[in-house]
Length: 149
Image (tube, rainbow, N blue to C red; front, side, top):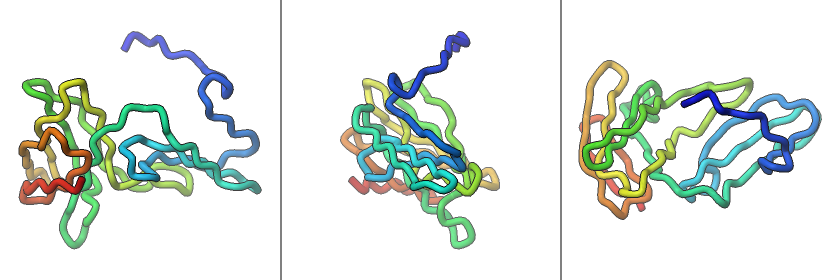
């Protein structure tokens, strides 16, 4: 963007973790299409910050092969009409003793997502259409898209 980020205190952000933080991870803990935050602390309980106010996104679950069932290393991009969104990569081991969820929560614009593109590890690319009412989909290595919700 324009480099306009500013530090925000815990009272304004709603995230207050006091003590010695050890790791954090993002994922859709409750399956509502909103990214939640989990923070581990040294000598204290793990904190879960459920996102209850954000706009729900599209949950995308990849179904890879036997050696990589979650599709780690794959790149995902949603399409809305003629516009394509940013690329998201499925990662593993993203922080100190933490790992983000395998299900990717992708932001959708006002028009919703109409299609998806996936580049699997090894370079194979697949794409397809998404049903407008879909809240969660699964994409396999052959490009089959199944609506889960």
